[in-house]
Length: 422
View 1 (tube, rainbow, N blue to C red):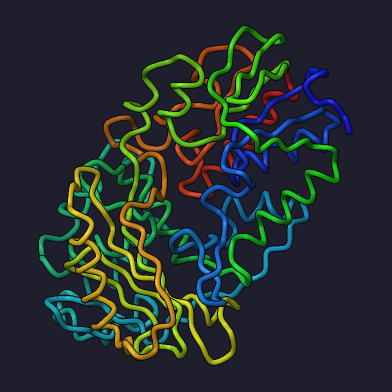
View 2: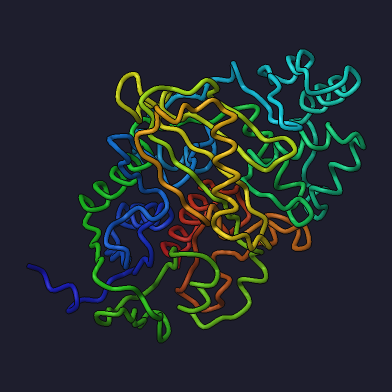
């Protein structure tokens, strides 16, 4: 067996999540020697998929934005992206404790019972022209202020806020950049998303297998505790041993992890608070009455991901209920569990159909909110924010491009390109 400790790697990638796997593949394709280190025992991070009573469930609701940065990078690397767009027929909005049909498309909103005739026209017109709104001047404007500026009617503002929550997972419009939010919602409405057959584990497995075939070394036997020295003589200290590398990409966790590993102390304030959610995954022996419900005046969401995606045995269903949490949420665990239980009941889930469930009290969706006070996406920490030559960052909170998995993919690719150019 090769003694990996006796060699110096061109690059050490800290973190085997989506960003780390993408960076490792790009570097290996260029002939660089790469070691990927992760203390979780396997690759994938929050992109891993689990079994719940023979049903596949992701780490919370996952959807791949069609044509987004992640989609483009995965296809460039030859990773199969197989899935299906969620059906829009039968979508309901939960408002004032009642379900209201939300027909698909901006024009179809004219048929919903949620809004008055004047409100229907206002929302329909706004969503129709959403893709033509220039988001750049709104990067430094909060989403809350922008929504208030376009319409003062409560139902309209609530519906707009719900759509932005759905696209960004963020329940903090008074901090979120309106420019970043508009780009995200516009992409969702124009190109759509995919629920992936087999879950996001298919992407993890494809990237891991590809990296191994290209010579990437994976080490899962100890968490990284620090990156010491200066390039090209870096020491990657782990709980098990020290490794040597010429360069390093930190793609693990959020800004707090990057601060701990690199010694800087300002990344968290610039990246903004994490985006969190409480999640209840359900394995059902049959689909519920309602397949998709979006909370309008409550920050909740319910969707059956399989079917349409192949995540459950024939005739059965994998579903997910979510409560979008504010950064300052300090609820006891039973509070979110109660809210999600009520939502599941409203969506028509028969208790007799429940095979198993999994509750995640606080799940990190993204490690930073694009802050209006920082200028939105362009104000996030860059890949070189650490200020140490040869030590770069990647993740869903890094760089000026995209949100969620798209940010992770774009920053990982950019970090790898910067290593290759150095």
